[in-house]
Length: 161
Image 1 (spheres, one colour):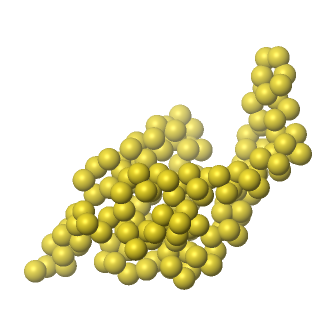
Image 2 (cartoon, rainbow, N blue to C red; image 1 turned 135 degrees about the vertical axis):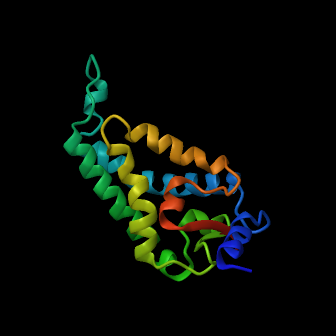
Image 3 (cartoon, rainbow, N blue to C red; image 1 turned 90 degrees about the vertical axis):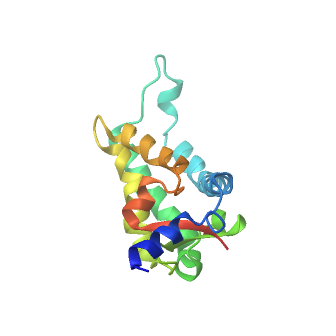
């Protein structure tokens, strides 16, 4: 059997892929943990001030970019050890799943952060099409392989532990 056939069989093995609901739950857990730290930061730096003006004013793009950079740093700080040791975030650990390469090996922390999460975070900032591409990329989870665009870019999948 060729390597490509093995990978195709490995990708479509429904028994080992994490469910869409468990992945959503893990993402929500990770988001809540991040918001616990980010919301006070946004509040105390005046990030919500524009919402209370009449008419409401959006945060400046520079502030949004700074928050994105801080969010990435916070995400790395929270998940640094788990990503290196187990290929997991806190949410994935709670939901008992992990990130692996298509061949089942554990990706490096750098690969996870650069190839997998950087596109996920940066694509929405592409003018005009970023939001659409981001939505389509996430919607790809409903395909047969249960892999979003950022997972396809990184050559990874999420499996049950």
